[in-house]
Length: 97
Image 1 (cartoon, rainbow, N blue to C red):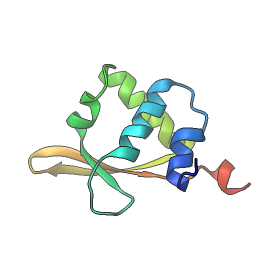
Image 2 (image 1 turned 90 degrees about the vertical axis):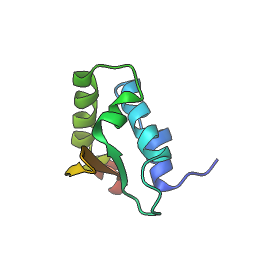
Image 3 (image 1 turned 120 degrees about the vertical axis):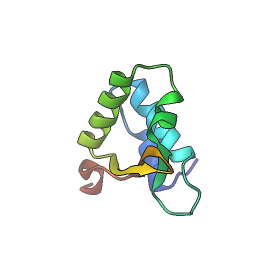
């Protein structure tokens, strides 16, 4: 099976926890459907899809950013609710190969 670069990052990259892969899969499969790479979510709705705590979710997002596999854009309040955009990106270690 051949994936796009984003698909390779989601399915083939080694993550430290299954929560990290679950978050990546959620970003990959959903979000805004404008055809762009950025996926926008209401922050609370994005956290609600799994049964982890708020702290576990935030730590997993922070680690994914640190690993270089996502970029997060905070939009503040959109339609009265806090929202963020996420872009899946290739980490430097893959780009250098």
